Image 1 (cartoon, rainbow, N blue to C red):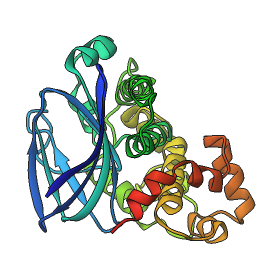
Image 2: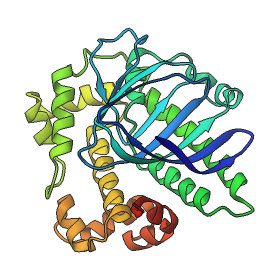
Image 3: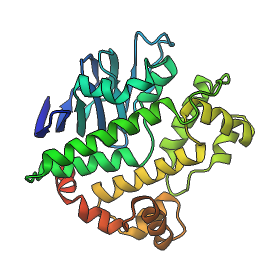
Image 4: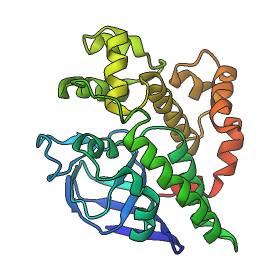
Length: 288
């Protein structure tokens, strides 16, 4: 069911490109001495949920996002709708993990929850670059993988702990509000994400919603929604042949020029140059 397509191994991490066709539905329990960071490529209707049984949180399942991180020696139970899926993951050596992330200490239940859905543009960008390198290796592939692996692990620690981890936590968003956020993101089509609209759906003032969101997620609601929008742009560029005008329209931009400017501001590349740069990953993702 799970096939390894290509691998790069270094003293600090191993990069793997994978594909699978899981039963429908599928249940899995994951436990590994290594820390693992994964970027998933899946159809829009492919749903994955999971929870950490020993995290002390409620037994409800939480959405597993496009990028997720499983700490070492931590059991994760997962459920999915099943079907075809492709992924790239970075498996970190235990000693390297401890040396690099020792300052963050043991993860709290809230931080473990955060690992299931890591947002931001850096992680998917670096993982996609590693996918390219793994599918078309060169003499410098191991050195590149080691350098990018270090950057990935440091960024994971920053996102998991949050930039304001030392601040006292408020009550936080409720499970119902989390569900509203997930449904809002899943329903976005032909419109730009809106913090004010999301706050209203959650029944909160925009200011209070943003305070709760930052305390819970470690980043602003606006930055989170921008990452979601750019992540969708990456998926369209890598998985479809849609023209820029159509992608811009689907993402809620007024025109292709505005979309290209927003994309360039994040990746320092225009969209079509980004697509060409990830040519090997694109061929793999588009294969049957």
